[in-house]
Image 1 (cartoon, one colour):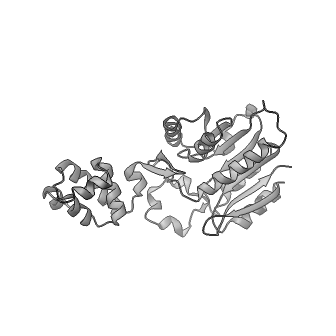
Image 2 (tube, rainbow, N blue to C red):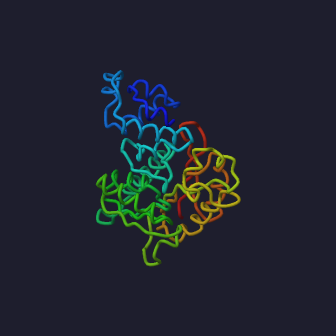
Image 3 (cartoon, rainbow, N blue to C red):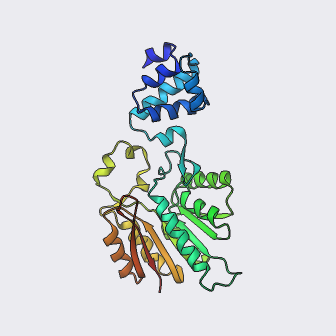
Amino acid sequence: MADSILTPRSWDALLAGAGLPRLDARALLESVSGHSREWLLAHGDEPVPAEVQSRFETLAARRRHGEPLAYLLEWREFLGRRFRVDADVLVPRPETEGLIEAALGLLNAMAQDGRPADTPLRAIDLGTGSGVIAISLSLARPDLQLSATDASPKALAVARGNAQALGTAPIRWLLGDWWSAVPPDEGLFDLVVSNPPYLADDDAHLLDPALAHEPRMALACGPRGMEAIETITAGAIGRLSPGGWLAFEHGADQGATTRACLLDAGFQEVSTRSDLAGLDRITLGRRP
């Protein structure tokens, strides 16, 4: 690799020799150079400045070792918006868009259900990470009184930065582990939403090189992988207003277990929705 840094190369040669899928290599080169895809195509045979080549070679090596592309670019697109991400937060997944869709459907239904116009809906996102759930909800419904928690102060800093960059309505950011972050006098919520860690501590997926770079506390939560869901559910029944909803994203094999958890806690109208691949992904329940 040192030889390739010292030897001047063209843009095309740099892409071809990166040892990466072309889309990954192009995204990295666009990022470090500041040039668009169209510019790179038009100037492919021209020499690359040494500083740009060095930065690209460094990032390409990190990508070959499994580091997520989003961390190298320092952003990930979610619902058409760019969210800043780093190694302190989970990389947002497309499956989470289904949780946003479900949550907005519930909020819209509650808003139309004879609710006084001067009584805003209240929602909380538990384990917000980069803030994609809370921020997406806030941008879709600026009238929503929204809180978001995370046990990591670094993750909350990322979420706050994303909210500021994207121009949300005020969000109340709370530091702490699940319900312990929420003051006892906070009042009741109409919606509790969460994409908690749902892998078991020994889950084989954790051996994936890409996941090795993401915060483990955002991925795994105990011997069974259900511990976070159970903790949130147990606390939610007393934190929701009558008729309020709890909505989870969970693992593809956890639909039945999550439904049973909600039913045992006293929730009604419990159901599971599938993602675009037809896998169980979102489970909802309503407080009586």
